[in-house]
Image 1 (cartoon, rainbow, N blue to C red):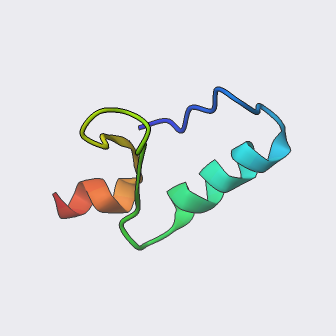
Image 2: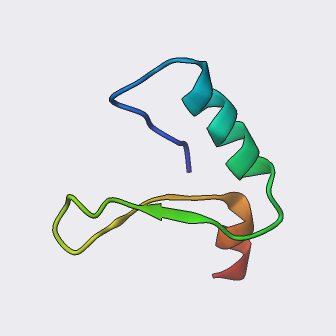
Amino acid sequence: MDFIVEKDDGPIPYVLSQILDASITGITLSDPDLPDNPIIYANAAFELLT
């Protein structure tokens, strides 16, 4: 899954996405501003767990 940034397309979101993708720990991000707090990002390590 790709990390999509709508508010800021500077270098920090890119670096953050690279860090999250490289982690061996399963990581998910959710959006509490949307109904039911959906998961908007899951790294590859999380996908291996599920």
